[in-house]
Length: 169
Image (tube, rainbow, N blue to C red):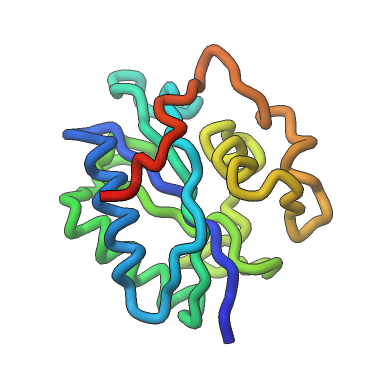
């Protein structure tokens, strides 16, 4: 069975755009996964509560179809983060690559390892705007339309970096 999964991509260390291009390329190569769409590329300030000494982030969202279970997909994404040199030193700290499962069909999952929908999805413009690029009518499992969220608009803290097929390498 194929599942529709939205994956958040982010980076702010090294060469963030190139790292996100690499990540999308890796998603295209994952067994049991089929890349369906990729959002525009956004630049954003670090999220509130993040350490203040960070560079701005580059963010996007990818939509895949997969037969992997949520835990299997999480393991694959964490392996890609490690290949990209991610080291987890501090909560919400700077990173070479961050891959988050935002939505997995309309499922609600809350385990020690995984929370879907992503618990900060509704509060982060750098997630909601790329989601809307891919699916302007997207509705969350609780019935809330993503387009109705307060952070579903551009602001001083987020801007479009590229709106071409930046991810095709």
